[in-house]
Image (cartoon, rainbow, N blue to C red; front, side, top):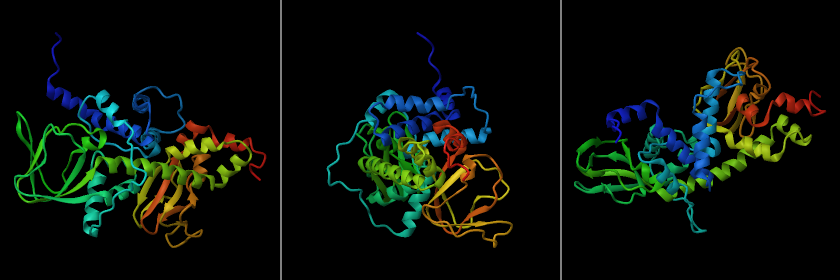
Length: 368
């Protein structure tokens, strides 16, 4: 019998290459796509992480890393932590829910302080940090406040898991049979992630050490919100893309099909920028194209006060020349309020559809 690998070496290896998080990102992609072939989705994603020679050297390494992130976010997939054999868990995760026709996402009222706490915690959590900001916004509303008394078991090792928790007030002990206490949970600590991915048995027991207040999210709401939102987002992204003149021009001339635009919409990712942040800066090389999903931006040249166009709002776009070349940015674009934008790189566009320059060159109206 071959010598077993020391468990600490296994843990170090998994941590070094971030294997848990990447595997869960792939699982979430399969869930959001409602794939009937989850292993293909997972294999294709994991293949993008392999260190294989790349014969396309147009972009630098930073842009290639961004391309991989776009693939991960395709159809708004998310990331997370998983801790068991992927084949068994993936098979369960890929199962499609039969949800009643009248099902709707739960919305629980909560104070602004609690909303910000949940958003900040999700943004740092392994499972949820790779989701789009608007995904986390919808999930935030579905969290329900629950309370436990001292000595109550919040979750019990071995039980079927279908809920995820974020601790808000109080403290809890996390223990594993045979090992005893392994961790103390305090404000902002999340546990039960596996339940949202594949309804796995609980790997530990979490016991309230004092009166505890926590936020609870159930598995059905998590998956259904993301699946439903994924479909809505795809429709919205496609409509926005079709409103971009260079895309519409290529469609009108038959150089692009609606199916290709749908595919392009599937790999766009969402970014959120606070008021005052420069999204692009004059003089920088351009690799990204943006569409405003919500909020407002201003375009300036030379000085922040010198606005060179109208304010851009939902459906407006900027940086479109980045799809044609890496010429330096001609202006600075700054968020004037919290703003959500959809983003794609020229490299990703080219991988999916080919060179936009070539596409437009096949149109007789190009350059008119």
